[in-house]
Length: 316
Image 1 (cartoon, helix red, strand yellow):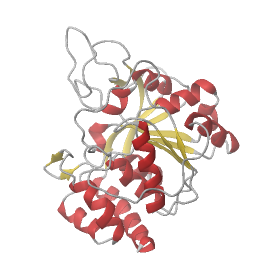
Image 2 (tube, helix red, strand yellow):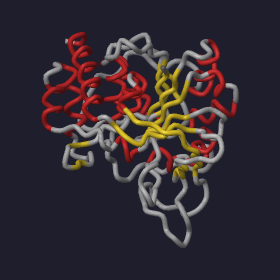
Image 3 (cartoon, one colour):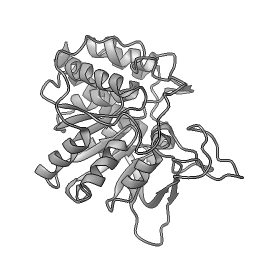
Image 4 (cartoon, one colour):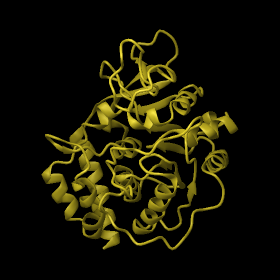
């Protein structure tokens, strides 16, 4: 697995799941601007790598902005100014690896064809740049699992990851592979109720210094079942695909239309906002995606908490 991310509170929790899962071999962490700017997402990834005991995993810096135009900073700041809410981790001792994320993605997947799953939980700029540089990446990768879009709600509206770089999302879905797409509509069901938070708290330093501050950060949106941990669902799906229900679909990404803020509802006069994912769940032609339409929440938390407990024992 290579994890392409923009840490990010739920990115941090997704990295913790990956670090605690013996089923996975983490070949790299690539960073992209998104929840916060590229300098911060990279600094956060470096700190998380060392805190989570993934010292041998390279962190490679990627794109500071979208394929075209500028990317404005998030104004809602759901991850706080630093990107990690109230989490305070020591400054990393080691710098990022040399090179650009896109090149790292191509070279790593090329060296192990059919073996490497890419997991993208931020804007898709790095993946799109890698595909533009080497279209055969889509043939060489074992698969791509991404967190983004909304596939079962109508009218659909773009989530942050898709709206941050609609052109990149269109490149990724049009690359000739089958993308496993877990939308915010389904990942939003992975909420952390009080009992789950207490189970996290019982994992020692991992829970006290990272997991619990992440889920309890006041900036996180909360529903009746607690805050959602969106990005964690993408890693959980790789470990156990039965965590989600997926169906074949033909997905296109709106790249023109109404330039609304991410999450805004479509304006009937201007059409869908850029980044809106339009999914035909009954495609007449070839499908380019497996779209998540359900989540086994109990199975998800059983898997995730087991990994957190194991990692917590290693970290002390």
